[in-house]
Amino acid sequence: MNNDLDTHNQPLAIKAIGLVKRFGKHRAVDGIDLAIPQGIVYGFLGPNGAGKTTTMKMLATLLKPDEGSAQVMGHDLLKEPDAVRTRVSLTGQFASVDEDLNGIENLILIARLMGYSSRIAKKRASELLDAFGLQDAAKRQVKKYSGGMRRRLDIAASMIIRPDLLFLDEPTTGLDPRSRNQIWDIVRALVTTGTTVLLTTQYLDEADQLADRIAVIDHGKIIAEGTSGELKASVGSGVLHVRLLDPSTRAQAQQLLSDALGTPVRLSSDPAALAAQLAGTKAASKALAALDANQIEVSEFSLGQPSLDEVFLTLTGKPAENEEQKEGAKS
Amino acid sequence: MSEEQSMAKMRAALVEQERPPRPNGIATSLTFAWRALLKIKYVPEQLLDVTFFPVMFTLMFTYLFGGALAGSTSQYLQFLIPGILVQTVVFTTVYTGVSLNDDISKGTFDRFRSLPIWSPSPLVGALIADTVRYTIASIIVIVLGLILGFRPAGTILEIIAGIILVLIFAFSLSWIFTVIGLILQTSKAVMGISMTLLFPVTFASNIFVDPATMPGWLRATVNANPVSMLTTAVRGLMGGRVAFTEIIWVLIASAVLILIFSPITMYLYRNKR
Ligand SMILES: Nc1ncnc2c1ncn2[C@@H]1O[C@H](COP(=O)(O)OP(=O)(O)O)[C@@H](O)[C@H]1O
Ligand SMILES: [Mg+2]
Picture 1: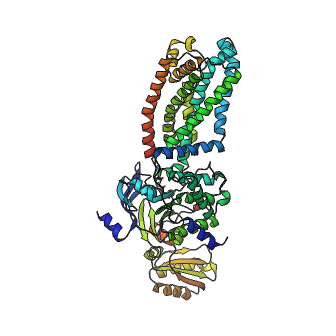
Picture 2: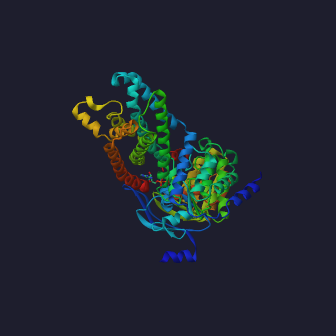
Picture 3: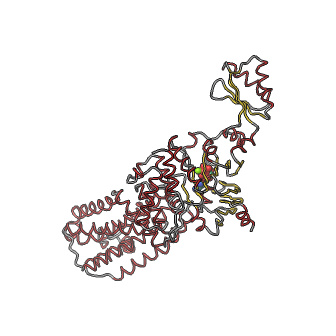
């Protein structure tokens, strides 16, 4: 089969063709193709309800796809689910550790299920707790852990035998910045050891910071795919950021810029700043000339790549979800 | 500790691990049973229910109604304790469904299901641990009975046989609650529905009173109730008058429960989203 050829020429962690999952009439995942190389961090970026978790659960053998096929680490998802399970680990969106047990018991449990003797299981559990900064909480019930600690324990449980492919579903949602950085460090350390990481996120900067390649998912479809640089480039050559000397001239400046550029101009949260999409870099000088001709003074301007926020806005026609909308997340 | 050091430590912990041979289904089931039993240490309330209800029911029925029902409280105790044993263990089976549902809603089962293990082992392990719980419940009831004046005429072996019969029935009954635990959304709902099912089943039985004085249709229902058959069988064993017919019927009922509900459980479990 051709799929085998692929894994020979360029080893793929995941190759999926036309994955579909329906819940009743609703197509939660609506034809997803993937070709994820080994040894990288791959990000699924999308708003709540986009189908990220469902896709991940199918790839981790927890859900059967209604249509399509996939190879995970060279094994057919439907024909050899057990072989897939020996190569991957899943850290789900909702903590999959046992809240009633303490930290070390949770890790011993997984180690025993992997087939380690009781003695080696204990040793491995404390080694991992130590590495993940949880040694002081080893004997504390997970119920009493902070969100960040729980997440780290959850990832540690996936590392009893370091998998070739780790699924990380929204690893930092709801965490404070410090805990988030700790998780990022873990992911970075992990890829250097050779594990491929597939992570989902609703945070644009997280995808930007961590992922080598990103798939933007919306309504069960991949609407864009590439490195964050490629995604930004696909949206346009760049963005012009302008800061005015006098905030009261902003409305007039917005009108002038959109006339001169023919593209939408957004008002930034800074009352003196605005940003415009550029069709080409030459347009920038035209825009500044228009402001100058109308005596609107500019204190600062810069030409930059669009942020992923802007990418998302352009691709989906709506801004990425914000914190409040995120909460009611389901499975 | 510096950033550098902690990164180095992390990498060291993440080097290739030697994969041990894949454990068999018995080993993984026992590991899950160990997990469930650990919880008794952390959530001793589980045992409180098992202790509190039999104590309350025994005291209430013996001293409020016992005299009127059986002539004297001590005579009533001989009748009641085997019934309380059945009732306590039967009610304890509800926790099988409740804790299964908890695990699923918390995402714990997603991890278990993504592990390369014999897939029914989390369920089988939970049921093994539950059997330990039923045994503890049985011992509590018997000891309580002995303290209050329960004097079984049966031999030790017959008493143990009675307890084992209760355990077999409870194990079989648990499969109904695993089905309920897999279907319903919340563990509260599982608790509610299961109790609603169990109350009529345990009260429309011969646990508390002899059905001889009941109207004919009710007596027929009560006598056909597997819980009554179990109670009669246990009374027989503990009283030294082995009731073979009832024992056979209890074993048949247990087999039927397992044959119907364990495949449904496994189907739901494998296809749970
Ligand atoms: N078990 C389920 N039953 C019914 N609908 C579901 C279930 N799981 C997810 N969905 C629906 O499928 C869609 C995708 O969900 P999900 O994959 O969880 O999205 P994401 O992880 O991107 O937030 C959503 O509309 C969600 O409501
Ligand atoms: Mg999700």
